[in-house]
Length: 342
Image 1 (cartoon, rainbow, N blue to C red):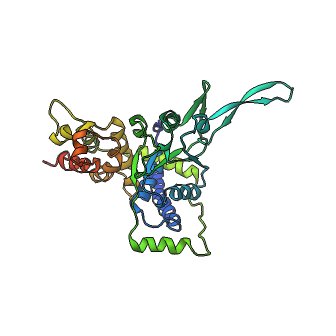
Image 2 (image 1 turned 30 degrees about the vertical axis):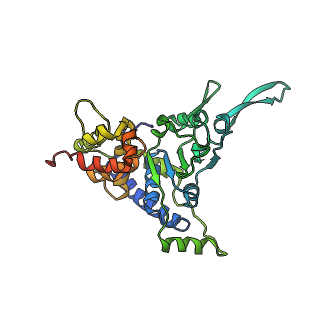
Image 3 (image 1 turned 60 degrees about the vertical axis):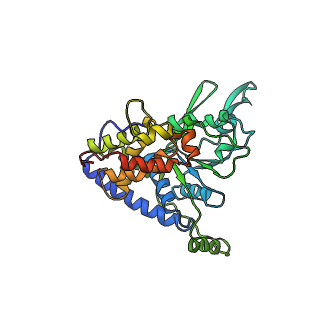
């Protein structure tokens, strides 16, 4: 993850930038609503991903506008967009790029690097679980370090950089489960559900007539980078920080105590990245709502998308039909808010 700047700008500049984040979010939403119907929570989590500078996994059956949402976000922000269709025969070099032999002007030959589709601002890894783990892992360095290494040479990715991956939860044949190490790189696991009937009618009506809406660029890439810098400067009170860490630590089974339902149903709990993303997501959520401080509610509101893909349930939980969403809900109820007396 990128580090915060060493020196902070004046408070007045931060206040003005915070107002621009609110305005920018409202403008982005207005543009996206021309194309994407419903899916309010998913859209909100995608925007928080952008403000933090993270990567997110979108899970839903076909036809729920996963690809359309990511593509539209890139267009509204005027960012370079790249879609990688993951297939069983996809190779790591098909993602990162490779060195090719080129003829020089002096007649000699040499190796030049040909960048792959990962060299974009917004990368859509479509159906990421359809390719073997070796190829999936080609994204790991890009997602974490914002760079790729090919043949011992390292190439930086131009900021801002985001990876949005999609998965179809009902199709398992010919798929490869994402390794836990890669799942942990995703800030959110965003679930997209079928729309309500009025919204579905609106989608069908709007996509079957002759006119199609045009999206306008409303936030620049420079603004987005400034927004990400401001997110990291938002202060977090010690009790809120402790609450985020406490939620994550409580998700891990322990032989020395802990919650009984965690010990009964969980094989592995969430890593420290979960706490980092709870805090960063809380900062972005606070700013998007016009606040300069993070609340306990911000952390609780993001616990589900941050934790649901980081908790590995055991066989007992599966046999009893327990889900990670249920476990996260129980964690929120079980972990006391500091100073609340719970």
